[in-house]
Length: 211
Image 1 (tube, rainbow, N blue to C red):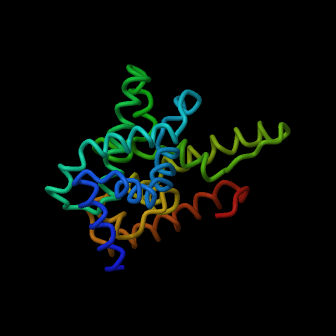
Image 2: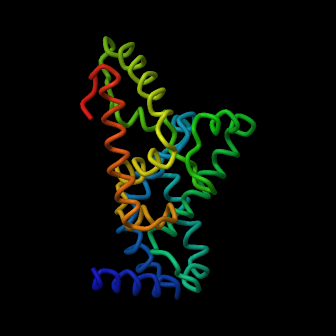
Image 3: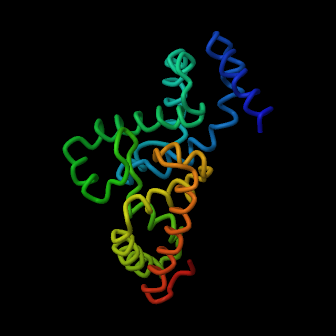
């Protein structure tokens, strides 16, 4: 772990000094994680207009322009800084393309304060249901999504966000704790509680999904 951290720090330093090869090597480590985050957080109304990979490319360019400011005050791991840049970019895209309709998007269950768009019950429900592509299942899937989305709305917002961070974005316990501004032990406990609560919800929905 310490060797890997040292390698990352060296890449960051070289990239900040203007070495594009080091920057590309650094992005190679994190691009897939950023793409996963963007795909999950991007408003559903925009997914038909833009490719998450293109959004990630714009995020990487933005991060490259501001890398010097991070190097001066590297108070968080580089990936969490990249993720924060991604959050600002997503928020800008949402405001630009959705405009006044952002109010409706926020009403749907905004879970995270600040620039990063929060995970919504709609996004969580879609991820939990997966893709049912057969025409005969379309109506069933729509009904299941509404029921599951309604149930997720009763969960504590932080529990929903912990579930999103750990399960769908696949952040570590340490990363989750830093994102939420809580202690690592508390983040682990909240994740366990969120999973338990999710299991209760799915059971209450008649067992049509396995938790």
